[in-house]
Image 1 (tube, protein in one colour):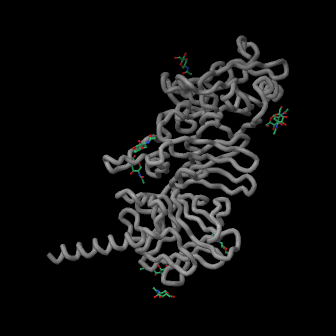
Image 2: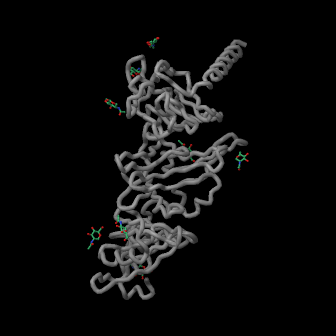
Image 3: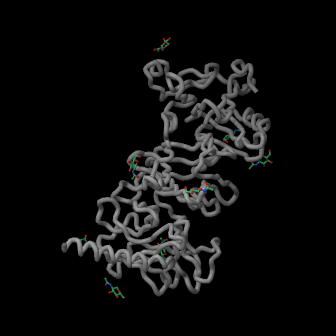
Length: 429
Ligand SMILES: *[C@@H]1O[C@H](CO)[C@@H](O)[C@H](O)[C@H]1NC(C)=O
Ligand SMILES: *[C@@H]1O[C@H](CO)[C@@H](O)[C@H](O)[C@H]1NC(C)=O
Ligand SMILES: *[C@@H]1O[C@H](CO)[C@@H](O)[C@H](O)[C@H]1NC(C)=O
Ligand SMILES: *[C@@H]1O[C@H](CO)[C@@H](O)[C@H](O)[C@H]1NC(C)=O
Ligand SMILES: *[C@@H]1O[C@H](CO)[C@@H](O)[C@H](O)[C@H]1NC(C)=O
Ligand SMILES: *[C@@H]1O[C@H](CO)[C@@H](O)[C@H](O)[C@H]1NC(C)=O
Ligand SMILES: *[C@@H]1O[C@H](CO)[C@@H](O)[C@H](O)[C@H]1NC(C)=O
Ligand SMILES: *[C@@H]1O[C@H](CO)[C@@H](O)[C@H](O)[C@H]1NC(C)=O
């Protein structure tokens, strides 16, 4: 009976409390947000407040989906500085600085906004983006600070993952250490740009999975993804920025992209309203050949062949003894030595994921013929291809030295023109 009464009052309190707080999506200078209070975005999609992850008793300031029963945190402010009691307090100062304090004094997290304004306010937007803006100014371009610039482990629609080339500022995801600890694990996801940009999943310093080049229609490593019913995506590369972004095809279907430290994968989940749970929509790496460098240099990873690692056409195992013992790490070398001076050629390998771009070069406007000529004239250029498959093919990507992490597809995939001795390259371009 007593328990029942207690439960009843606690529930009432929660209902009243959440009702009272749904009205508020903005924190101004005179306000503060304490543990137990929340901000809720205007359309009720997201909520900002204090939470304890998993079985941890630590308190963190975070953002989660508001309209589903399973608390799903998409952003954490004090990832590395947990609060050990319920005295956490969030406020925005007149200089635009966001301050998360404990015991009214110790700052556990802060964020500086870029410009001074008369009346800075903190607002939780319907996108799940927490922004500082001038109270009088609602132009998105004028945000003085935004949580989307400092992603945690989750990429939401409208978020840019990539690099601001003007400032060198990186926006990348870092997985939670585990369910109980949102501090950054060693699994990260972002744009890497050495010659040509691509998305890279890293486990510590180890490259773990790459997207392949953006070919205008999608990433070379996931040729069919464009056809999915859930989300549209784009990869923007201009003088100012290079980033990956996605949007939902149907705004009422909730979907999120998240890193998973324990499984070492990036996953996409979609909310299933009937089952009231998140369903895994996709995962990467998803097959043997997705994981970076499964086979050594100049090898084609083909899941439909045995062995899965196959020397590229015109190549032979570098170490036959090891190759015979199923150790493919030494990779392959040209069967016929190249002779750059007296003329090499190229053979076309179809339907592949483009090689690792660590030693690559790209020109977005050159055509395939110009690309071939440029590659041929440089003795260390080992392969080239069109960057964009759209509109009949355009752009030029070239690779120097060993070709790494090529995956074979059965359909789709890009063409790659690989340098050969002229004697091998009878039918080549
Ligand atoms: C809680 O954290 C504060 C600093 O944030 C520290 O001074 C205090 O000792 C901690 N208390 C416990 C019980 O760990
Ligand atoms: C923090 O300061 C406010 C006003 O400055 C005061 O009302 C509140 O009791 C203080 N809280 C703690 C935990 O000291
Ligand atoms: C904010 O600015 C202060 C001084 O202006 C600096 O010490 C601090 O590191 C900055 N914090 C962040 C998160 O940039
Ligand atoms: C990681 O993925 C596994 C398998 O899909 C899942 O059971 C687990 O809950 C995920 N972990 C996190 C932290 O999301
Ligand atoms: C969007 O999804 C909702 C919920 O699943 C569905 O009821 C609605 O018909 C969908 N809208 C479109 C245009 O497909
Ligand atoms: C490797 O296997 C091939 C084919 O079975 C065989 O011809 C060759 O002698 C083997 N070489 C070594 C070094 O084991
Ligand atoms: C790309 O190629 C075009 C055509 O050959 C050339 O005009 C342009 O300067 C090149 N751009 C770069 C950045 O090399
Ligand atoms: C070939 O390309 C590499 C990589 O861009 C460059 O370092 C080298 O100078 C080029 N060699 C010639 C002869 O153009």
